[in-house]
Length: 194
Image (cartoon, rainbow, N blue to C red; front, side, top):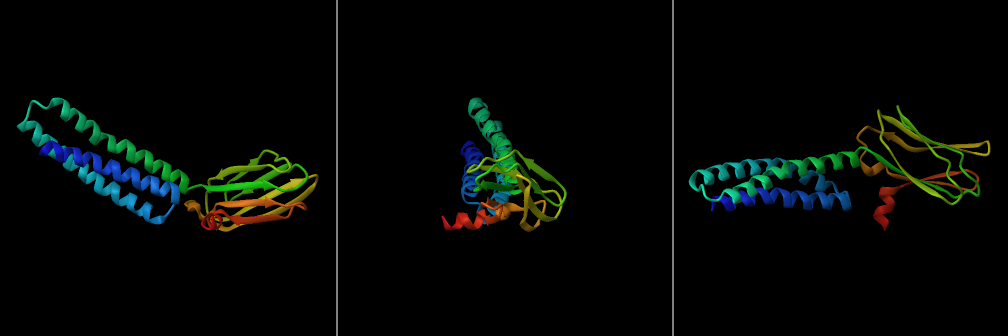
């Protein structure tokens, strides 16, 4: 009975944590983010409970050495899996996904994404091509794009206010039209209509 409780204490956090992570990864619903935090807390308590029940079981039953070893591995596996999921969530939640589409008949020679503190410069984008990049903001303020082609320049504000922890609400599709007019579409809104 105690070894079964240890198995359950090892499997429940792994199972629920993985299901919650997959739900968040494919939907980005806030509820999964919150459930993930609760799962980490409850999972830690369950793992500790699993170790206690395993310890009691091992004092009572010296013969099930291999079962105990398997339970220990399963209990310990919870920590690197939770850490991996946390790092993935933090990486995705602290970056802005930008998709730049060139609808002009010429190559965009210079594309610069400028944040409050840092900026990135992209390689030239040929006519009809699109490029996806990630921007990790530092500081708070405007997010702008500067584009030039054949000595003609254009600029636009991608987002009026970003922070270091932007979430995916700032993900944007930037379309550069024939006369270098720039249209910014919020990808979160576009994803909702699909």
